[in-house]
Length: 199
Ligand SMILES: Cc1cc2nc3c(=O)[nH]c(=O)nc-3n(C[C@H](O)[C@H](O)[C@H](O)COP(=O)(O)O)c2cc1C
Image (cartoon, rainbow, N blue to C red; front, side, top):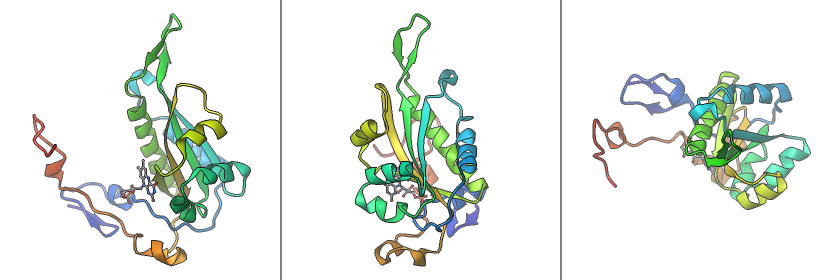
C-alpha cells in the first residue's frame, strides 16, 4: 500500500495517483499561454483507436474574453470556485472518422480516447505544479453554439486548471468539501476472468 495526500491505496501504487485530486481552491496566479499549450501538447500524445486523435480543447486564460465565455457556461456552483482558476477548458471529441471514400463512420472509442487525453492534461499539469478539476456542470448545448462547434462533435466535459491554494481561500460552504476523496475497494472494480461485481 501507499499513503499520500491523506489517502491510502491497497496495493503499492505510485504516490502520483493519490496526489492527483480535484481541489477547488486556486491561487490567483495566471498561466502563460505557452504553459497551457505545453499541457495540451502532452494531452495530444495520448493513445487513440487508429491514432484518430478525436480530442479537441477549447481553452481560455483568466483575464481574457475566452475565459469569461467558458466561465459563463458553468453552473453557478462551479462558477463560484472556478472563476479563480488560471485556465478553463472545454473538452470535446469528434464522433466520426472519414473513410477513404469520404464516408463518415462512427468512431466507436472517441469518448474513451478523449478521456485518456484528459488524464494526460492532468498528468502534465501536475508535473508543472498545477492541479486540474473536471466539470460536468455546464451548459453543453450553449457550448456548442458559443464555442462554434461543427456538427458531429460531442461536448465531453469542462475543466479548471490552476495552482492549488489553501482551502481557507474558499467561501465557507466549500471549505468542508475540500478534502481528497476515497475509493471503492479494488475487489469491487477488478474481476479475474468474469464480471463478478454488483450490477
Ligand atoms: C468528467 C468529470 C466531471 C466532473 N464534474 C464536476 C463538477 O461539475 N463540479 C465539481 O465540483 N466537480 C466535478 N468533478 C470532480 C469529481 O467530483 C471528482 O473527480 C471526484 O469526486 C473524485 O474526486 P478526486 O478527483 O478529488 O479524486 C468532475 C470530475 C470529472 C472527471
